[in-house]
Image (cartoon, rainbow, N blue to C red; front, side):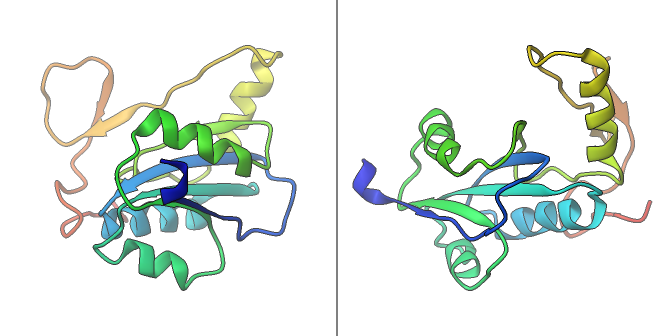
Length: 158
């Protein structure tokens, strides 16, 4: 399986505040929206590492022609556990975040996260975010907000 995986270390900086693992499987529109939200809404130094499974939808071509993000590519879906272990060798920060390619990072997310980490006072922790969903399903673990149900009708400014 290793022979079908390639690593691309694009970033030259060696010191980031956070590394974000983002797996994607033929979701070019979503991964671009996710990365754009990180670029627009981060105050600290962030290292996204994209894990591309397959990529035949144009995802691999897009990454091959960019010079901003580290990534790994597998010609087939290698599974999340295997992919995260391989991506670990590219990490250039003390903190690793896991995100899905359809997630959107809100303004100041990183500053607020770092403040919470500093309040904890040690490195033995795990934090999670709050999911925003458009419909009230009775799930008490979400925040309610309809910003669109598809990428085409996503309402970023709201």
